[in-house]
Length: 246
Ligand SMILES: Cc1cc2nc3c(=O)[nH]c(=O)nc-3n(C[C@H](O)[C@H](O)[C@H](O)COP(=O)(O)OP(=O)(O)OC[C@H]3O[C@@H](n4cnc5c(N)ncnc54)[C@H](O)[C@@H]3O)c2cc1C
Image (cartoon, rainbow, N blue to C red):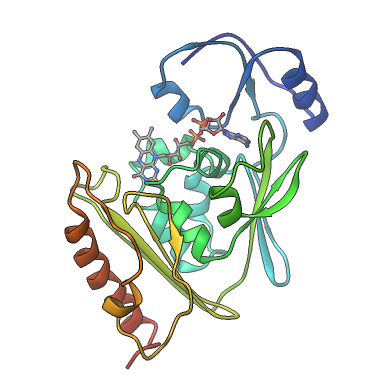
């Protein structure tokens, strides 16, 4: 994507007034936008808004939308699944630029960190709309023409993320994340559809039974049946790791 001009507002209100004035595209790390074709009048770069922060509160962790995946990877504040999911994304150069805001706003079905955030029951804060659970954001068009400001989630005890990739820098064939906080949450992504949460988890069920109602389908990376089989193995390993299942 190419821009006629790029503006760098220093307040969120300035962003909104730039959004009202002409056709625009918001720029996070700019990586995915760079891959897109087209010509847009105005790019609104969020890098001057001080949205690159990680805040550790008593029971919640808050991450500014412009925080890069590399910063998440280096921090020791996060549950294991965050580092595990981020480490699967490209190389260090890519993670130095890609932001959590861009990764979430794009609603990418292949997303690794997206699956981890769904299993963490993350909430998103938009400047105009306010707060919304990430799972609701993914599955609706409620929030439009807005700026994602912050991603937050409650602290959890155990968490584990696994992805299966044909090679290190490829998108996942399927990914899976389990967290245990107030309850056990299991998210499955890159099916290749958007990440879903498994409902009504019964700890007497094995991985195969837990994944029974999750839909997996075919694309050029693999068949639905293959994805299901890989997901069952990864989930079975995580359940043993977390000692939820004997
Ligand atoms: C070569 C390559 C390989 C990749 N591999 C993987 C992978 O294996 N696994 C994985 O999970 N991800 C992967 N990604 C995706 C990457 O992790 C990021 O999700 C992606 O680059 C988007 O982040 P960004 O900051 O660059 O966003 P941008 O490209 O700047 O923006 C993406 C979209 O989000 C919008 N946007 C950005 N920030 C905001 C905001 N704060 N508020 C509202 N809208 C916003 C933009 O307008 C745009 O529509 C890959 C990306 C590339 C380029």
